Each structure stands twice: as structure tokens, then as C-alpha cells.
Length: 131
Image (cartoon, rainbow, N blue to C red; front, side, top):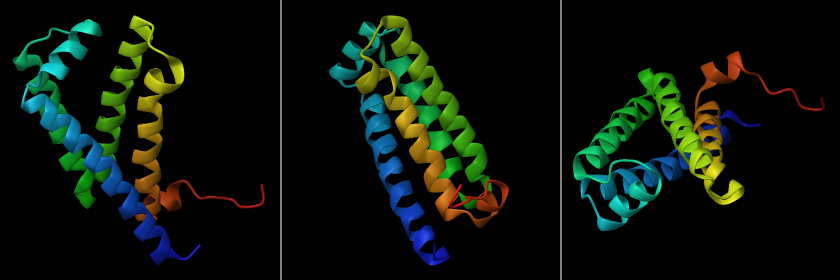
């Protein structure tokens, strides 16, 4: 595939991932009632301080992910954050495909976007067609 097309696809996928995280962290920073209700249902403290702490973790991880020199570290941190979300949903018995695996879907998008936009990462994990 054309490297320019791969880079553009990676940037588009990165934008989708970033928009999701920006929306989620904004809701946490504003401490919306829906955030408190959801956090309580998941067994987390339903206070604004906890929501803002989670939003700050997302913000730092996302900034690192979007900055090219630290994008792999950011992807690792976002993957850890999403792993915590998956574990939380497993613990409370959420539906599999819509809730538990949502963090997995998002993690695949994080790494897929990074793979598409980063020639260095593609060199580490090459795609073999016809296998």
C-alpha cells in the first residue's frame, strides 16, 4: 500500500480516537451527572475528584499519544487505561460486545492508527500479505 495513503488513514483513525477521548475526558472534567451515575454503577467513587483524576490520566496519555516522539508511550498508557475499563466491566458483569470489548475495540484503533502513521512501527511489526 502507498505510504502516503497509509499515513493519511492513520491520521484519520487517530483523529477518531482522539475525538472519543476528548469527549470522554470533557465529560469527566465537567463532572456531569451521567459520569457520576455511571461511575457509581461500575463501583467507582462517584465524586468529581475521581472523575477529574481519570480525565487527567486520559489527557496526559492522549497528549503523549498525539506527540510523534512519545506516541508509543502514549499508546501504551492508553492501552493500560482501556485495560482497566475492560476489567471494570468484566467485574460488574456488563454485556460482552457492547461494554466489555469496547475498550479492546478502541485499543485496536489506537495501535492500528499508530501502525498506519508510523513507518518505524511498521518496520517493527511488518504486514505480510498472502500469509
